[in-house]
Image (cartoon, rainbow, N blue to C red; front, side, top):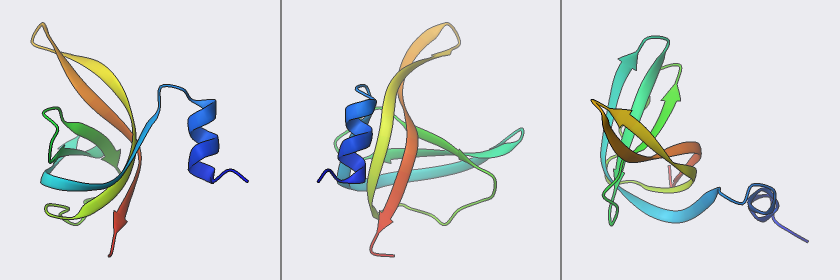
Length: 93
């Protein structure tokens, strides 16, 4: 029997799921209607972004399981690779 993560990954071929990733930095800022969260992970040089309705606890130094889509964001006429987070689970909290 397939786990829920495996079945979702089969349906969405561009979705990436990583387990036990270490959060190097976590920044939260208000962005109109939501709190934009930006995570930097150990071993990655691109930001992981997601929105929440309210402020969240600081995830710096925590391990997380994360599902995301790689995408491109244009900032000041520069294309920047970002990871759009669709699911995040904090391990051990």
